[in-house]
Image (cartoon, rainbow, N blue to C red; front, side, top):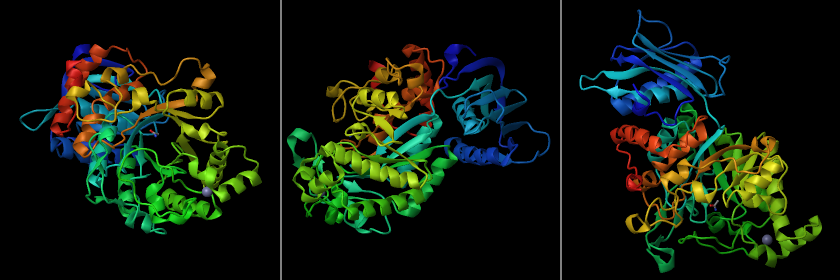
Length: 512
Ligand code: ACM
Ligand code: ZN
C-alpha cells in the first residue's frame, strides 16, 4: 500500500502500511477485553450489519483460537484522550484505546478500511495506526426548528458524525419557527409552539408564503433514545434552548412571558424577531423548569442557552424591564441581557452544568463561567479566550454549511455566503494573535447547519457532506498537511463508503 491508496479521513497521526491483509469472515469474533470495550464491540457489530449486512460475532471471553478482532481500553497509552492504536495483521486485528472513546474511534478507522468482497468476506489491508485527536470539541450542529427532521434522520446524521470522529452534536431545538422538545410541565410549548400555519417559500426577497401547517417535535422518550444512540457512538448531545431571543414559538404558547403579553403566532418567515422573553421572576421560573427537564434528558455537562440576535426594542419600551434595570443599576439593555444570562448561568451551575452561548453573550459582560461559541467571526472567540473562557469556534465564513458551496447558479437556493470545501479544509480554528496560554482556551470548532432553505434530510446531507469530512480532518488531525489535492484523492475513495449508505453528498467540489 502506498500513501496514495490511503483513504482514512481524518488522517491519522501515524500510520505504517504493511503487506498482506486480514480477511474477515462470518465466523470472525470481535473479542472485548473489558466491559467498556464490549459496549463498543456491540455498537460496531450493529454498524457492520447496517453498512455491510455483515454478521460479526461479539464475545467477552476467548472462543476457540481466533482469529479475532480484539478490543481493549488502556488508560496508560501515551496518546491524547480518545486516541487509539490499531494493528491489522494477517493473523488478527487489535484495537487498543484510551478513554474516552478510543476503541470506538479505532473501530471507525477500521470501518473505513473494510473492503467487502463478492464472496461476502471483507478484506482489510494490513497496517499499524497510532492516532489521537487535536481538539476535544469536534462538533456538528443541526437546526430542527426551521425544518424538522425525524428521529431516524437525526440518527443518520449522528452516524455520519461518528464515522468521522466528531464527538459533539449541537441539537438546535427551539426557535421562532418551532419548539421541538416535549416539556411535560408546559405542554403548549409543543402543542402550540411546535406548529406554524405556513412557511416562507423561495428567496427571502420574494416574501412568498405557503399556507400549509408545518411542524413536529420529539417526545421525551424519543430524545432519550437519540441521546443513548449518540452515547453509544461516543457523541455528546448539547441541547440548545434559545433565550432571551428567538423565542416567538415559546411566546406563541405562553405570551405571559413576553414584555407586551402578545398574542403571537409561531413565525412563518426567517429572520430576527422583536418579541423576546421579558426578565420577570415568572419567566425565570418558567425557563428554570424547562431547563430542569432538559438537564434530566441530556447528561451533557454543557447546556447551550442561545443568546444570539436578541433585539432590545421591547425591553426599551417595557416598564418592568426599565424598573429592573434601575433596581439592578444596569446602564443599558445589553447589561440587562448580561443580567439575564448570569441568572440562568447561576441556575445551570447550581445543577452542576456549564452554559455555552453565542458570542452576543459577551455584550454587557460575560457570565463568570460561560463558554462562548464564536459565530459572527473570530473576535468574540478571541475576546473570550483572552478572558480565560473556553471557546468553540464556529465563524460563519468557514463553518456555516448553510452557505453556498459553489456557484449559486448551479446550486440549490441557499441563505447566501460562500464556503467551499477547500475553504473548510484550510480552516484553522486557533486564530492568530493569541498567546500559547490563550490558545489553549480554543477547545475546538463546530459547523452549523441552519435549515431555513434546507427542506428535507437529503438536502441536509448535500450541504453537510463532504464539507463536514473536511472539518473532521481540521479538528482531529495533528499532522494536517494542508494538501488539498491529497485530501481530495482520499475523499474520492472515502465517499465510496457513503455510496453504500446512499448518502446524498455534494459533488460540487469535483469541478472546483
Ligand atoms: C446564529 O447564526 N444566529 C448563531
Ligand atoms: Zn419586559
